[in-house]
Length: 67
Image 1 (cartoon, one colour):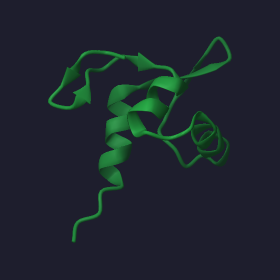
Image 2: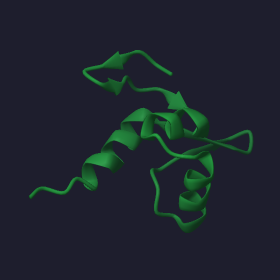
Image 3: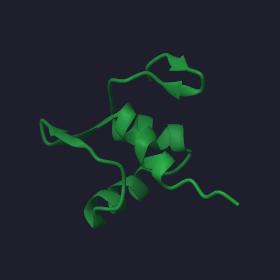
Image 4: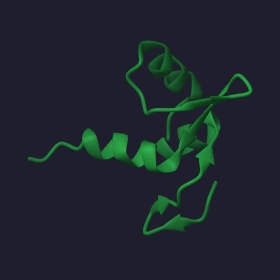
């Protein structure tokens, strides 16, 4: 995983496993989200999903609930 900056990874590509660990979830959840097109944006490289950390963080921020 890239070096953290104020709790968020710096930009660069991450594997499904790295993103799952960052989000504290199982990789199969990300697999299901990708299939259903509801998870973070990704790029296919060599048949594998790669996530830009900035896309993951943007996806998280878009789901923030303020009370």
